[in-house]
Amino acid sequence: MKALDMPSCNAESEEAVRLLQEAVRINTVSKVGDEHSLARLLAARLEQDGISYEIHALDDQRANLIARLRSGRPGPCVVLSGHMDTVPVGSVPWRLGALDAVIEDGNMYGRGTVDMKSGLLALTYAFLRFARRPADSWSGELILAATSTEETGSEGAKAMVEQQLLPAFDAMIIGEPTDCRLVVAHKGALWTRVCSCGKASHSSMPDRGINAIDKLFPFYQRLSEVDMESRPHELLSPSTLSVTLINGGKQANVIPDRCELTIDMRTLPDQSHAGLTGQMKALGERIMAEDDTTALEFETLLDVPAVSTDPQASIVSIANKVLIEQGLDQTEAKPRGAQYFTDASVLQALGKNIIVLGPGKPGLAHQVNEHVSIADYIASIDIYEKILDDYMK
Ligand SMILES: [Zn+2]
Image 1 (cartoon, rainbow, N blue to C red):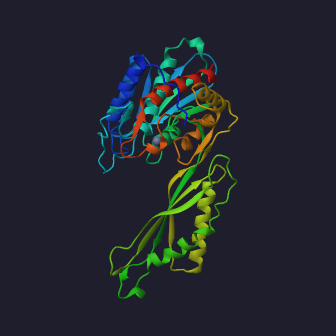
Image 2 (image 1 turned 90 degrees about the horizontal axis):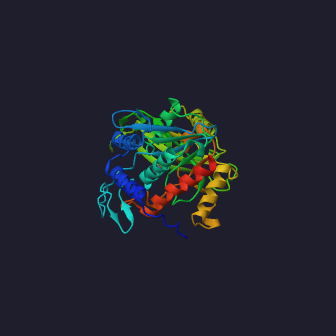
Image 3 (image 1 turned 45 degrees about the horizontal axis):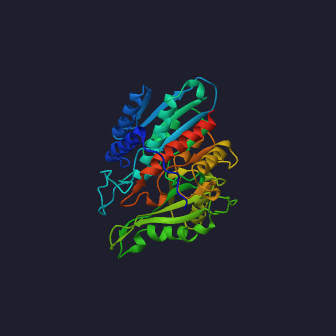
């Protein structure tokens, strides 16, 4: 794989590395860590340049941060977005401390270095560069949106949409790790819990109870009746349906009165989540109609639709051109799809033309010894600035 051009070392990049270290040293594990401290760290850096911001608390642990720059000239509204939370450090020991942000051989180690404090900080530095520009050198409005609890269901992004904290936008860059490649589409996720409700009894007298495990089994067996067919997507693999959790019964001598099964569907842009939920419920209805002792209940645990930006959109062609200028060849710079979902699933309610592009190898995200190349982190500040420079000229 061809490497990006090495960025030059200067005072800004040295400061950006120090601020990333400080960010990694703050534990922001989703829901239990301290996102407020990270929001305040970003806010302090914005304040240093006289940029106003808003911090919106979700609760004592969780917060969203939004900052806005207006050029004063009419033009597009662009949102730069990244999440502040991380997945847990895990139980396997790290070679270098998971929250120490140690730099070794040009890489910074720590939870969140890849996913996605480096992307969030690189977006922040691109934002700071625009704040320093003369107003007549760009047009439109640039917004920095640091979100809470993406890893546990994009709750910060949902709050931004529900509370109308963000305006409608013309384009958005999400700095999730893509190894500085251009992602324009990703799958959606629909997680459904199906609960079978039975009646407990002593297992020596099973006829006195209703076995919730037995009653859930036909539903599991007939899941293939849910039609997952959809139009193929040029950048995404076909949609999938997997049973990922099953939970039922309490002890060996009790007929279980409850059994739960969780289904994880990964969907394509033209699949309706409401339609898929409807199909699952209809299958449940058919099974209950055939056996009146079966009682099935459905609960949606996560509903984040797929994202697909038109590969002809100007933000895509500009990002492609910038990556080629940065040293990638045509194949490496071309738009691609990703299997994971991002806050774009939620934030697309406010606009189209979303690209996902950020430093860090996606395969290192959520792993022990997660680390990001400092050179890629610094290079991505230039990449973001050049994309914005062209799109907002
Ligand atoms: Zn992420």
